[in-house]
Image (cartoon, rainbow, N blue to C red; front, side):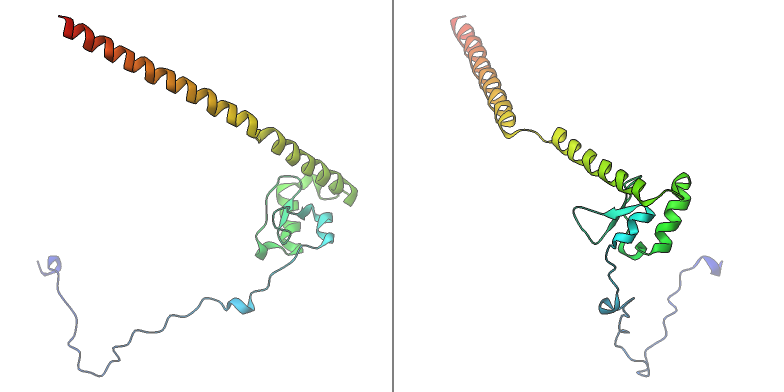
Length: 152
């Protein structure tokens, strides 16, 4: 029965222990973290610099962006050999063509996905007019109801 009881097993503080909390240890020193930069040799491994952040590398085949800690040639080579094993022995010209195609596809997607500001304004104007007409129709219906109820 004793195992079901909740006991307070704290020992009284006799002043021998330090009441200050232990200082928190940092996991790493931020000044010692190495920031790797993109090198042009990485294109031979299938990676190009990203447009938004030229420090990061992006795979030209699948579009995956590597973290800065993974910007080591061994990590890039492992990505190429595990994810894209058929492209391991391709020359650098192949990856240059893929990079150009990837960049042009991104530009085409941006053009298609963006909405013209004039079209957006026209859409808002039309929806405003429709809402205004519905509001007037609602007032007309309410006035018809009140006028018919007053006449009876």
